[in-house]
Length: 331
Image 1 (cartoon, helix red, strand yellow):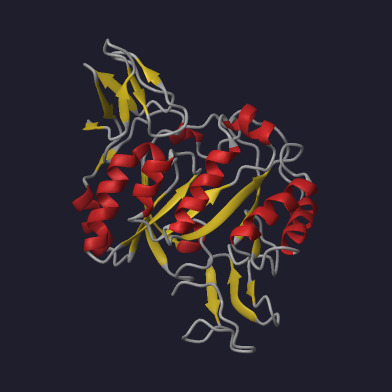
Image 2: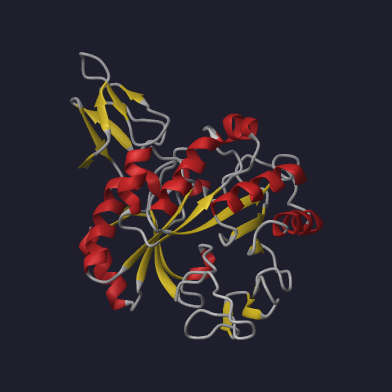
């Protein structure tokens, strides 16, 4: 176990309050918080999943998904267990809802060594919700940066301001979920306030982190066209160059709602494209909807066929080869 960073005494006894995420779980002696990864042991809060990996793989960077960050390259991707949200449609519920039986124990320097041996330029913290592994990710990303290895976070963005600011200092890129634009949907089905996520996006951007956003579209839940336009307008207010991934939902965990209709994804993407320069449709193969085009002249910049990526319309300075527009890409 590793001592947690963000907690405080809740009363004069041994009860503690976790301050890592907006849930602010009140945890009595011997008990754990909502995410199950933090336990009160004799008046001290400990992280239970420090260095505990359930998944480790070399993935295409596009799988995170990150389309504008080292396109076409691969990255060492790792996941632990636990989550601080209550989504009944969770796509990774086997590792997010409880501690699996098979665990690999890895310390930060060991993980950095694995990345070096696999010739990976970066480490992605993904699969389950990485926020609940805050201490391990903070230690690893700081040590990795000293070795010239960058860190990537794939997260729901539900974390308090101070830990988010701290984590953003050692992250090069993040993909953050916007689960939808309906406040009731966020409160009743996600278990948090949308404002918490928007704040995290703003903090990461202010810190200079490369940001891409993902919205998983669930029929009848968050597929409203007006709400998608409101979401796109908010993103545009930060920057119209922030990539938005509109992903297809499939039934999973406790949700039996049928998979998202292709027509709905296309319609939502078209609505978002009125305000954003880079909108992609994921979890489904649709010709042209995963390619990157110049927002000014329409030149094909990056062609994607599955995870086969061809960068053809961007020069060495990151400009469109047709009109010389500077493209929002990290090489």
